[in-house]
Length: 150
Image (cartoon, rainbow, N blue to C red):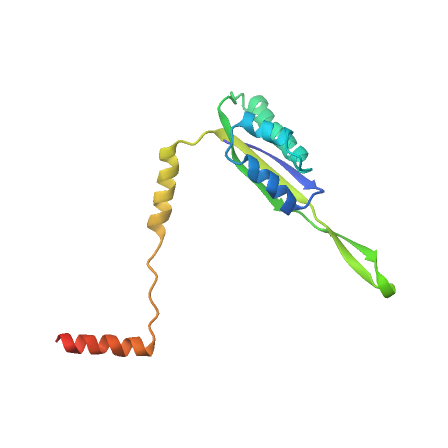
């Protein structure tokens, strides 16, 4: 069972926050906490808070034993942008965009290799063959080949 926690409207650019979130995706909970504690990025602090919140949700709300759990989902989506203006040369105003992030972290038991392979196999089977585009010149060549074989 995956348990998640979300922090919304974090005053940090999603692009910068995604760098930190990419570090912990797929790691065990203990390794992810260590990685975030020693990371020098500013976004590590709010991501660590969300991770700890997800762990606390699993323990307190669902009475789960989180030993052996991993970070299953770790994503950052863009929140609303706050627009500010800065005075520039010759009386002009330049737009300053203060971006916000929504951070989501879900923890759960480690997925088995067989489960992942089944998902991959179903995705491969769903793909349809793509029809090749033919040019008029290619059509003539194939027509000539058919005639010569007969």
